[in-house]
Amino acid sequence: MRTPIIAGNWKMFKTIPEAEAFVQEIKNSAVEGVESVICAPFTTLPALVKAAEGTGIKIGAQNLHFEDQGAFTGEISGGMLKDLGVDYVIIGHSERRQYFNETDESVNKKMHAAFRHGLLPIVCVGESLEEREAGKTKDVCKVQTEAAFADVTAEQAVQAIIAYEPVWAIGTGKSSTSQDANEVISYIRELVQGMYGESVASQVRIQYGGSVKPENVAEYMGQSDIDGALVGGASLQPASYIQLVEGA
Ligand code: PEP
Image 1 (tube, rainbow, N blue to C red):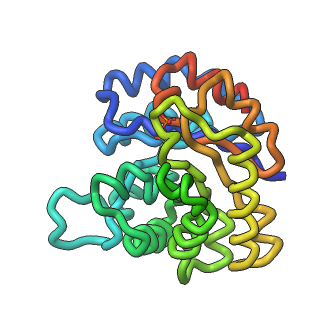
Image 2 (cartoon, rainbow, N blue to C red):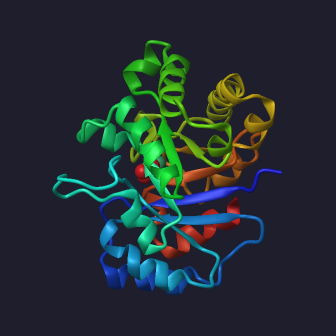
């Protein structure tokens, strides 16, 4: 009953012509019952929203500022993204936590900003290699998930996408086994149940992310609690992106 969702995270790749050409190539590849979202650099968003019109492909940003406006040079607000016709926004990606000082507190503020502007968050949680080796995977996911959802209502939470992304698996070619990923994702679902109850927990979609490719996407999707994938590297080529959506 949860619609599978594949989201591509293009990170800091693609110019406007490259983004337009990508949509031209994938636009007829919609698979019924699978939601497909491209999360792209800010500069390509207007062109992508236009190119994706009528295709069913949704467009997302990769970040937003938590204030609605103000003296925040270089930042983009939720209202500005909504203006462009963007549907989703990635929040708390590990690269932002690692390189741009994103904290659990700023992630939570960004969740509220997204909902204020009618954007759906794809909120990322996950442990580092050190934390995994110290047996802290679930503790880290608990702290990050509960902080992200602080003061978020049940009506909002049910619309959010949670991406479980073990940091050591992102862009490394090392992926979590589908069973391990499912175990952590089931645990995250239990956390959601603890915060919002059974109905929200059974509806909220939780993705796995970390070196997902066309060759392994079906294995993850075959797990009981995994509802999709957040995909970096393998989302950059149209042929591979189409296979990811088909594999879901
Ligand atoms: C990501 O950027 O969220 C990601 C999971 O990257 P990759 O698929 O390249 O590991």
